[in-house]
Image (tube, rainbow, N blue to C red; front, side, top):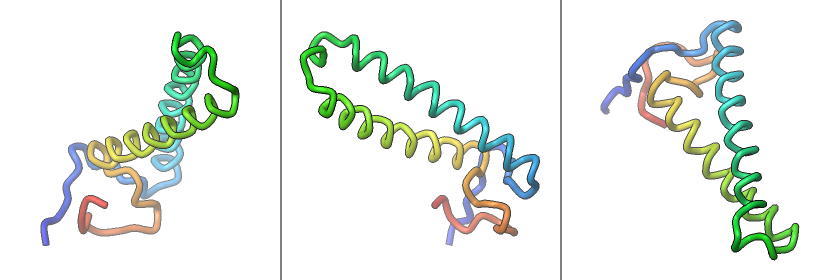
Length: 93
């Protein structure tokens, strides 16, 4: 089995590290989500969509964006293991 090694080992093993990493990920997802909502509202083709349709589009894009951000942070910083995990990374996911 191949052992996964992040680019920078910032595993959230303390409350301080876990809090900072979670705050960074949450901030990035929130800012990008607000920006996407603005783009959906201003985009010419979606101006005539109902609010329900816009919300569904926004939810799908936000879900995909969140998964992408978590995968990037997992690859770069080893984020996502939690404070209970210890030892080496067994695999990427």
